[in-house]
Image 1 (tube, rainbow, N blue to C red):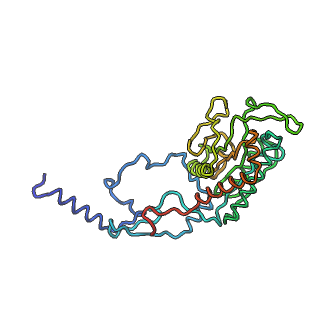
Image 2: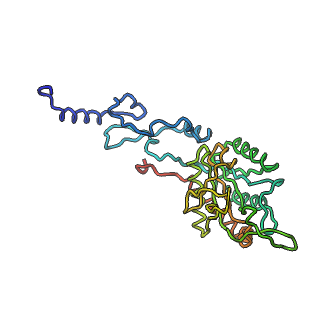
Image 3: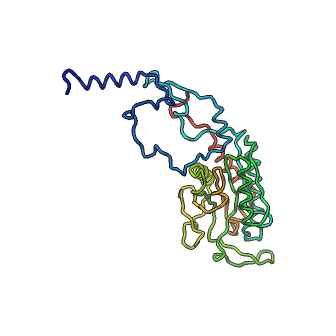
Length: 320
């Protein structure tokens, strides 16, 4: 040890001098390495990409940076973005949600217990949600109705959604069960099939979506709103009896499942969620899904989820 050198006093003086320096976060790369703490999250994985649409990126780039001073650090200046959560609020007037009507007039999806095509249910509910969203100020909402046979229409709808420069995609469907679980009956003199064993809504997301985290957040909001209205989610997807239609349950409180292979979810360039609004192969629930009361309940739940998804988040340190 060098004679006359007092390490404790030196450290205190050095720290005090450092705190009093007017450092700006964006220009702090000059700091010596011993002031930086290593983190396993420092380097982003090679496959990680920004999932925000270009339009939102342009909005953020155009916004003027706001800075605030932290009393604890003296004159240090930090950008406002450093004090906020990762998620950012959206402007309802410019936020673009695409409502994808599941299936097509040529490929109508499942058939209900009373011989009504799923596409009819999907289109009616999607139109109702579109109307409600636009009434609430989400005027950029787009209704996507696709034509064509089943598989080709999947790629057409994804291409159309991506071309709309959307911020969020919600695909509207109504549920059924695998053919092996169907039972026979007659309705109005016509042969039909039903299964009263299962009922309820379900919400699906894909891990392969470029913004899985945001997709999951929105899916959970939808499930939360539906649950708050007294509805329950379909639990059969966790059961082995579903065979290849069995899917992992990601949120047991709100009924969110993963369905990674769904083209409409994994190929969309924006956060994407698929909603099975209810079972139309269940005879009792089909009648409920056909009622204006249930349709309005589901439509209002989706709108409430969108509004909560877009509401301004408070800064970590409160209003600045």
